[in-house]
Image (cartoon, rainbow, N blue to C red; front, side, top):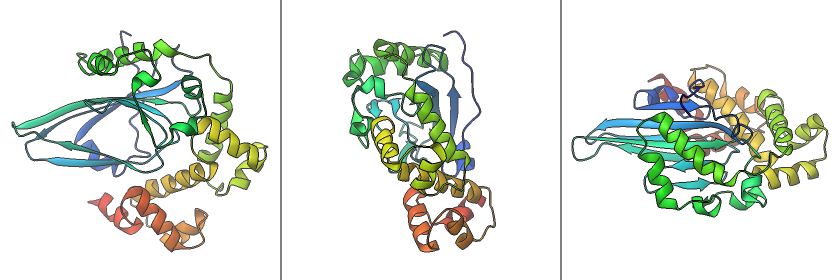
Length: 276
């Protein structure tokens, strides 16, 4: 890979993205053509912080498997149903810097690499060597010691190519179902989704267990909470009780509980924090 094709910086799924932009550099790059059926994008976080400065970045979960190259923490991360927090800090020598490269796989596309239901990896971390033909420490070193972003992406791509499975057409079916959830805010129940995509609830649940690693209910709820966090991060003055009802909750209390569990703050507090 001689050049990288960037894609717009994400904000969806990143808690308080405006604050994060002041602390670290976040890039996303498209994969080369042979990896595009499997990898949605590469993401790279780089930072340099003064001594004593600490920033905790919270990222909301997604129905995707990630391969992450991070010093001492490199692993395959199954779908994590809880929020992920990462601490960036300055070192005692005046400043602290670091880089992390991640590969976000297309939902369903890791089934061929894993060769078993994706749910078996949910909320688990696996060594790279459990999936790819590599030695863990050496693979981490090759990626993180690369001179620049392009070098890191090229090194990671070579590791993924050691275990490329055949392209599974079911990946496109999964993508269509997840797009239906994302783009139809009125889908708040599993039965609604099943009706929309034309399969039974039972088949939908089995499909998600095998290919996605999270239940349809979880994916629907996660998307509706992302809708809410996006609205509130932009300072929307929408009534929270009305928002809860719009998202399919029976009452504001249950919405507040789920939102705080995912984002780390109640909705009203999160809206205020994003204005600071």
